[in-house]
Length: 603
Image (cartoon, rainbow, N blue to C red):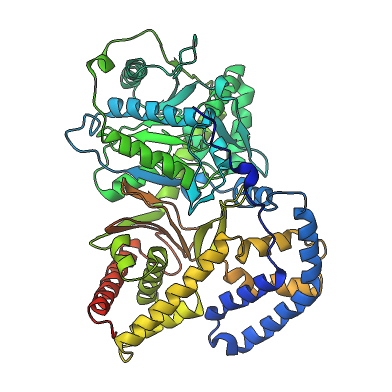
């Protein structure tokens, strides 16, 4: 098949450095809602004067430095951002950075619906098929409105791992031919399952994979849980994991070899002992599991429970959710049509998996037990609620003449305002993949128009037609910002780049970057993002600040899904189930008003 995956890469535009004046004007607009009296507020007026002085003084110098820095790079932000946002982040990647998908249920007549090993075999083979299409570059490149998207991150999906390091982790990409195997975790034991015929490099048959899994399951069932599960160490603070990684490597050459095998493996698949049934239980297992039957450093980690529930967990440092969404959505779609052939179950012991046995000393054993306790405490400090609403989706929202994404963003703002009486800084991920090595820019969802909308909506004296007019203005404002952000013309990444250029903290630079509103306006009380699939039961991540909510949403044809996470002990006493209640109240009101408007155009 023709190589096509990267055929547009050379044609992709470089990430631009936006005009300084554009960014500063947009920044001024974005902070107005957080002042008591908006643009008439004395504090705003004083800070706006500082911004204007920065624009004609130090800002110009920093802009010139950034333009010079960017002049010989196709993406001036890429290395800065990967390091700052991910590799230098020291808190545990799970549950704080990684993101999950929970696969939708397969119909009961399908043999994959509740058979753990059959489903695991199917997943392994399909993920291998997807990885092969990346390796031979036959995967179709993505186009949005005929504009190509950057496919660079697909290179990092397989045979790659994040590796702990002092102060800043590293990512290592291995030759796929050196990693023709998958790592299997079961009861905390680690195995190397072979995926290719060593004679001709062909992917193994269903029964050759299936029989390796049977042998792994038999071995682990006889042993019970591993008393020293190495995987739990990947759940720790990154500096602690680096220290333990060094200790582990120093104990024996076998440990070094095992770690290398895990790092260069295609991906990880976990055979879980639990059987989650509720949506929250499934999401919990997808989000972090039990900690010890995981290897959190891998960008692709699949898991299958005893009852057949399955999903994906992704380490975030080299890719965002859209590439893995594509793979998982296709994977679940393929499950629906699977038919078992009699030969798939033939006994075949020609290929045996290999256990990766680690040598553990007393110090490391104690550290493993400590991390088991810490992990339980960490995930126990977080709460989760899955909100789903059937009977309204993108089809009806479009009939209301609303942008589906902007509609859900304003739904979230209205629900939050009903709940707390305030609007807080809100992050929405906007894709910049139309640029070479583009990842994301921030869409600041709170605007003056959004603030006016929620105030009007909650004011019983405001007539419905004015409420709907305010909604329309808020939607247009949001739509405009997301367009700018996707074009690389947002506020946050540019200001971040300017800050990286600072060598000397002059008074005006200090006043600009250290004004309280600078940090407050990017302190994400609400962290939101959309990735939609009809084939998922769940998708989500953690809140990013102690007072915050993590709001991962899907907008499907006729249903909405928002996964809500929060810290149980948070300064605002927010509870996911209460936010879910206000989402229902808000969506019912919006749906009723917009439905009435459709019937009565005068509204």
